Length: 305
Image (cartoon, rainbow, N blue to C red; front, side, top):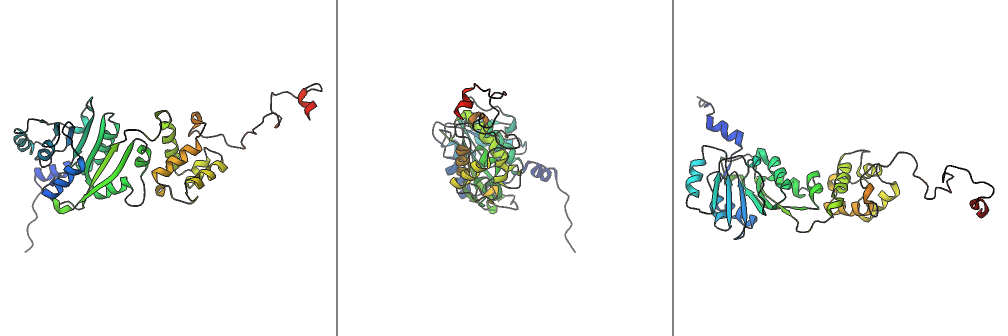
């Protein structure tokens, strides 16, 4: 006789909604703490603190820690754990609604996997963020760090200001309950010196959006909608990008080369589409469109001819 299938409990449904897979393996916890690189004076915001598995070792190595947890089922245990940790403040609140601190800080946590994109967006938008060390699904971490051999639009867009890397892998057996996939430690670090000046960042992002937009069917064709074809071809050669290279295979460093070559000396028009039709002649007089009037018999231009 087949075993009777039990009806999901409220706790089961809560775990599904909150994407809760608690990190229980001590080696995986140590790997996360090492990847976070906490310093004795650092302020760390922990996302999804759970029962405090990461909270305790992080608190032992940082200056202050704010632990966010929304699940009322684990809050009593987290509060009890943190009672003996004077540098830790427990907040029964949604991390995504928090106002970023007005001082430099880092983010760390075994985050709810269903909220990964939202947590990453929050971190990228926080001006005081130094680094975020997030335990995500392995596939997400690989996608954002080029580990598949491809680069995502978000990574390329933010590359001038943020460095993305895969800092480790965590087997699914390190979690309880055991998820369907392995985890990956995603490390996003704000660069101390951006790779592009702030004034040209909007133009760089427009170029990346244009390239990933697929207009024209290839990266080269997309860029030609905004720049002269010969200039695009030259920039692609200089960046060592074949004309038929899929946009996802272009490295972030190659995007920077493309931007610098395509917008050198003309940042004001960076990323703006040029009008359709033939490009204007370099010398308007030679094209017969100089001042809108014909040269008279005494005009010096006629005498030079």
